[in-house]
Length: 137
Image (cartoon, rainbow, N blue to C red; front, side, top):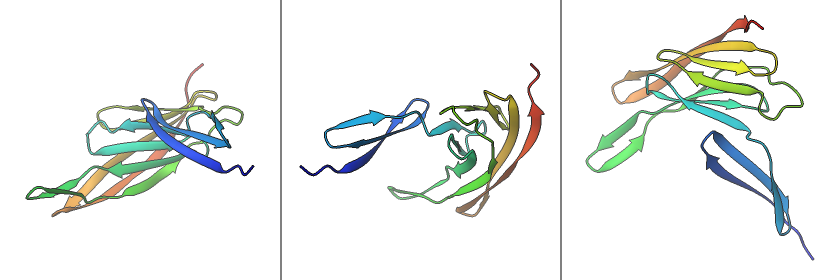
């Protein structure tokens, strides 16, 4: 009997869930990405629980007649340090002008700011993250 390895993705309320399996069964693993909409409604922040990569994707859409075409892209803003042994050590919260990435184990905080720099009908994501140190315990 031949078994094939397969991967599936399904969007959950708190991010993307990844399942890997062989044959007829599969096992669902912990969330590998955590997402939050930016406070200024210009896009979404995606944080990798595995690598700590913090990505900003913009949401500009060009509409011509009845055709809507996404016109933007994504940008790596920075990296948080996930805790080993924890599948979901990083959390993300959006305020009106910033996004905060917090390591729930160590208390490390990063503040990220991002904007969609639109010129005409083309947008370009811009932004960065800075470390704010650790939360008081």
